[in-house]
Length: 198
Image (cartoon, rainbow, N blue to C red; front, side):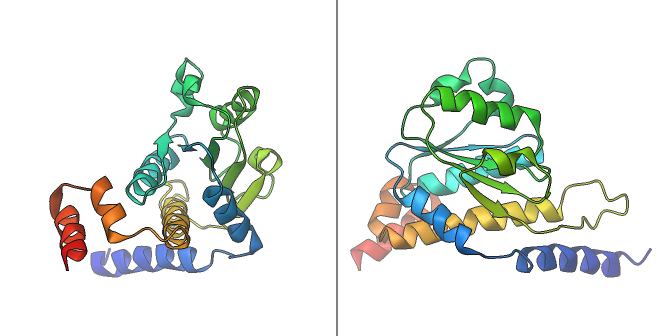
């Protein structure tokens, strides 16, 4: 195996999957839902998608939109108490058939959960039926030789989450000062405060 060539192929496959995302009016709808959220944004996903959901929640928090990760497994054992009326759910599932994610949506509705934004790839997913706004990842081919390891699909989820966070931040006119008070520590905090002091 030519390692450098193989790594180049994998990087190209993941980049191609991201640039192939069909950006439709549904993205505008998703931004509108996030902008008008009167509660907090809950993100959810199982397995690798869950790691992305957790990261997206962290990004939303640092860009001045209150968010929290809701683990779908733990949610069914008490963590649904995090759900409150006015909350928005951002659900990540490549297959759109992850049982725990679907259960979080169905049970969360009973607690007054607001709009659900679903991010999925598969055409025959249950998430498509449950979501108020559906962001289609488009067909994704994993570069794994087995066709099993989720990498390109996870890269797409992360890119979509980042795009939503940045657009909402810009539309809400979040300033360097706003960012700095939420991200006080570390290099970024110093840069944000320096920007404010200029």
